[in-house]
Amino acid sequence: MIRRPLIGVIGAATASEQGCADAVEVGRLIAQGGAALVCGGLGGIMEAASRGAAQQGGEVIGILPGADALGANPWVTVAVATNMGHARNIIIAHTAQALIAIEGKYGTLSEMAIGLKLGKPVITLRRRLEIPGALAAVSPREAVSMAFEMLRGSP
Image (tube, rainbow, N blue to C red; front, side, top):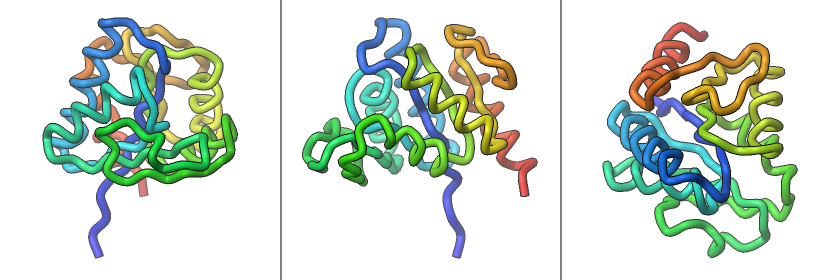
């Protein structure tokens, strides 16, 4: 059985116009590369990345904080209701094989830290979030290329 790579997109629920534009492009590139997108399934960066991936026919897995799968943004193709609140960030970090952070605050930083602790590639777009061990990308294309390159190099 061949499995798709799983690339996580993490970021602010309330995002800037530039952040959303970047997220749409990241989602589009993830889908074009044949990976599934993993995210928190709600609004902002999550919804923008989901839209980009879904519009390219990609799979979008939303790991939701609430108990109702209907709470997912309209672009999520597989909604996982956890009823775990912020603890769902751990599931996102464990599920994704690489993480791309676009904007965000403490929740995004927690996902980045968990991903790094697990030894996963963590890429920040446009240096909006810095944490030791995370790699910086200056464009959506570079961020997604870095994620795919690192996944090819992992066991």
